[in-house]
Image (cartoon, rainbow, N blue to C red; front, side):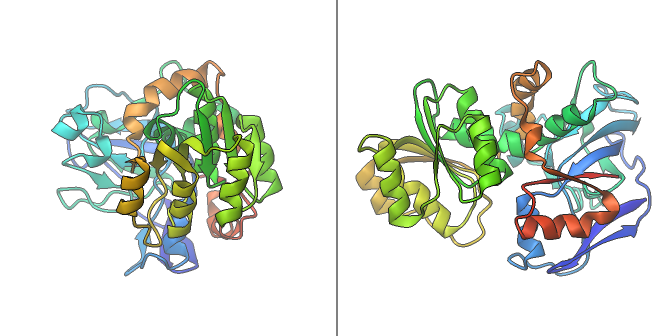
Length: 351
């Protein structure tokens, strides 16, 4: 099969690899019908995170179950499934608590599982899914979704679930004032999540007209292009002299965390979901003085998918619009380049 392999900074290739098969009785093999490039994939692409040797990459995909192991009970051949961005057993204490990203038997796509067996990356034609019952979410009544529905279902594997996690962690609710730092796919989904949860005022921080337009369509009431002190003062001006009840940090750099913290009112909440890639350290004295609550981290997508899936299927939300470019898998190197150069918000890949 064809699979995406990262060799080093700026070096993404599509190569031939063995087609996956059932290794353990709890496995399933999924034929990928759509995958994508994530903003966090750009960290190794840019060399921010080292690539010590060539490895499979990609952690967001949807597809059709092709085969299942003898111990798989909740899935059958032909099921259309969403794969969260990590696998999980579903039965350990963290999984039972809903924190599936902290599963005691966790494995990531493009790595090895706890038994040392290889797990394919999501940017390929097929994936062996360990712990299939605890990992995959079946989409009931859907076997061949159209392009628009496929795109929205794909966002549930990561970016929509992550944007929702940011909003939940920031205590967004009816009547909230919200600032979203970051205008990538996660930030835009954070805007959509904040609107879904009933926020009254949503300020998207963005300098790009195409992203500003989508943010407004997703529910942003205001756009702030300024950064640093000027950005904070613009937020204060828009909110009548005060800062935001809830702030969503959706980038992961020191600068974005600083912007987010200084946009949060005393006693407010900050939800962070940006993958740390620049040493963002929390200023404990500032938090102490301002009584700001900080929460977040990796989103437990498996836990969030059922409630978000319902809204996708009934048309309440359409997060798939964050995909502004679609490319064949063979063009994945160009997909990475387009996202790195901010010529695309998010690229959907078709095997």
